[in-house]
Structures are given as structure tokens and as C-alpha cells.
Amino acid sequence: MRMNETEKELVAMVLAGRTEAFEPLVSPYRQPLLALAWRLTRDAEEAREIAQEAFLRAFRSLGGYDASRSFRNWLFQIAANEARDRYRKRAREKAAFGDVIAPASVGDGPEAGRERQEIRSDILRSLDALSPREREVLVLRDLEELDVRETARTLGCSAIAVRVHLSKARRKLREVLRRDFPHLEEGR
Image 1 (cartoon, rainbow, N blue to C red):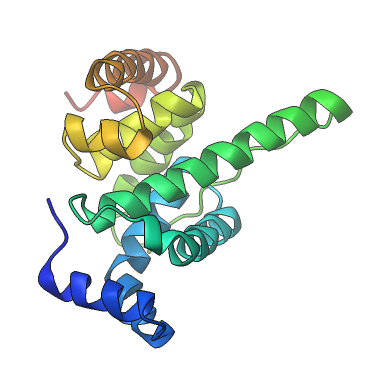
Image 2 (spheres, rainbow, N blue to C red; image 1 turned 135 degrees about the vertical axis):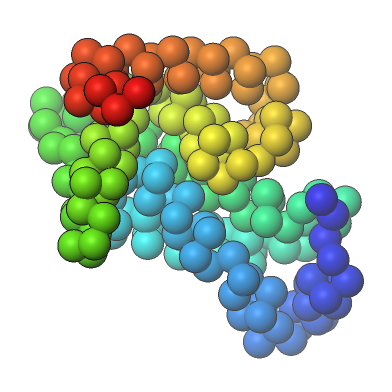
């Protein structure tokens, strides 16, 4: 999916020095980008920081943006890279200092559909069993519904790597769900 005409015009305006055009350019992507960051980190505060940093990086890098690519996927790539960088930094800090970083808790949604929310929370908790790359691929393919090629471009890897990581992620997820959440299979 290529950049639409409105996005092209807004990019041109920003590059010409009219920075106020950046807001309408990225506005449609605020919620999807925040949702992606949350799914990757499962931490609301960190997700907001990742989304904010992704928009800042996009603004600074707009001159190098390839208009033949989807603007949405380009933003997603920046956010995924930021999430990956933060994960690596935490891993280095944890190794250096021996600190234990507690996983973020998943808050309950509205009272209506509480059982559905609990199941969703169980599934999201099971994502902790995945490597960061497996989680990225699973989130982009199965939750954000990008196709294999878009996912590969977003993550800067091959389509084959996407398929391999997705297969591993789905297998691990099934194993974790069967082991830790057997009540999810009872409804089958």
C-alpha cells in the first residue's frame, strides 16, 4: 500500500518547512501506533513513550522516507525498532545490575464482557513466552493484520524469516495456552 495523495502533500509541506502539516499527517496513526507499542511491550507508559519517540524519529527522518512505501508501515517499523531497542537496553541493564524487571500487569476492561477480557488478558500474558522478534511478527501479522511482505519490510527482514518466526510464535503460544490456561480450551 503506497502513500496516498493527501499524505504526499503533507510530507511535501513538512519538508518545505511547514512543520504544522506534520500533525494532520500522523494524526490518523496515533491510536494504531499506540496499540502496536502496547502489544509489543504490554506497558501503557512505555507504549506512550515508544509512540512519542516514533513520531519524533519520523519527523526527523521524513526527508529519507521512501514514498513508494506505506507511510503506516514505515511508522510501525520505527515503533518496532524503538521497542526492540528498549528491550535490548533493559536486557543489558538487567544483566549488568541483576535487577528483576517485573512484567507489566494487564488491566481489566469494562465490566461488560468480563470473561472475554479475562481470556484476552490470559492470551496477552502468554506473549511473554515469545522472544521479542516472535512477538513482533505475531503482533504485526495476527493482530495488526499486515501481510508477510509488509511485516518483513516493517521489521527489516526476509519474508522467510517472518514465516519462520510466526510459525515458532504460534507453536509456543499454543503450548503455553494449553499448559497455563487449560480453561481456554474447554470451550472448544
